[in-house]
Image (tube, helix red, strand yellow):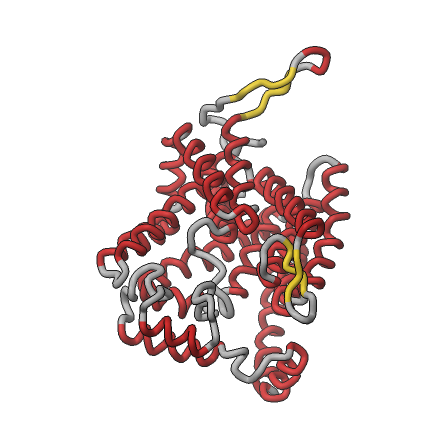
Length: 412
């Protein structure tokens, strides 16, 4: 694995011998990759995946504490999110749960920063792309389907989760195929991109397919702009913004017709399958405790009256795996407007920083981080994609934020 910054000490182990010679494996890079493996395969491995992520990540931090601490200081907004979530136990209505999950979120974010410290951006993408590729193969070999439409769920047990992972793999495959590196590796990833798109289609997730299309177009457009001169790029970007505003105004003038066509195509009702009702409930709860919320992950708890009522209303017999289908509303209920402001700073900051990184360098790897972060931004308005423990998307956004800040500091 490639290290991000050589001044930090390396620990290596040698394997092999005899006629084949010996190969040196950089231990910290191996631990970083192992931590990524644990979080990628957590949907299939469950607790084992979380343990692998925690053990490998903790060992990585212990081997190089000064570098990880320096990274955490430079990426202080993400640490602020973790500390805010953990400290919410002091006002939470479920203090034990808020403290437990807040500490787990803190560990997840610190390990993500440690991975970003050890692996260069391209190495991170290679490891993540490789592991997601293995997850896709496992999904084809042993994965399942759900519902009357036989939508694929893969090893994830959910068509939306599988579709999201397949979309992320497709973006990584295309980006690594366009990035500098060995021809064989680039060709392999390019050839894997088409099956990735096919898997998104097999998951029958209209939302994931729309997000994938939008992020791929955005990534290609930004790469194209980066090839222009700075003045030409600004002119084109401004023109694109004007076109987007015009399209928005045109769409708003025909909103009823467009909405009806969209709902008819996706099979959803006028409430977006109950989302508008959930959002109304969330707004009422936020009004009761607007600044700090009820505590990190302290709302969807068995025995809590409001949660029980919503589970009953929407027929959620398992009384789990349910949320307000909007990251900002959902998290504002739990950690208030103050906590959501920190989260928005990191998410939108990561999107902006990776955009500028791509425009400055024209790097396909930078475009990968921009596209993946943009996909999370768009998903955040209809789902709750990140800022919880042992979450691959949380690790990804934290790493993107750290890498983009590094690139900006270097003037790259």
